[in-house]
Image (cartoon, rainbow, N blue to C red; front, side, top):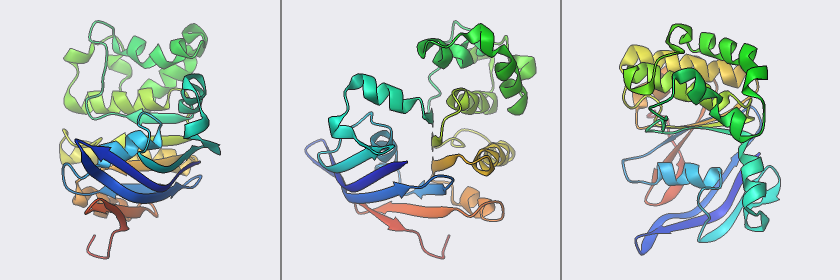
Length: 225
């Protein structure tokens, strides 16, 4: 699916990540943890081709990122759903139209996808908010909407960057449940988070691999989690 081999990334004149090797297998579930500034978001960006490594190799679905042009990367990204920290909605559009944007960009007819869109809104519990604009949504509603938009294209991989960072514990649990459901449907999940309580709660629901960035390296987290 997605593979990083001996990847190094530099930022501000120094190495942020060093000699990172990671393989996201089909149907796997991973947590990525580490302190703020450790490079969790950067690692996710390497996984979906927004950043290119200073050294090492990134493969997206069997193709070397270094050999892919912009169109090839864009096509590969259709198989990757990303939940960003800041949600990145267009505030002048209602929620339904925001969720449909990836369909329009990929030349699919949003009108023909209305049934799927309605089902997706129901799945994240936002059917009644379909006409609301992003500034009218609560933090939890925005995060659920961000997850819905990430999966509108039925991706094989979902990368979530601190998806529970701005919501309360009950909403964190609800978002985790949705991500676990996606994994049970066969999706590969990688969640970057600093919330160790969320990781502990997930262990009763899914067989998750927990990774930690420490001293620029990627490590398998120990039993303390």
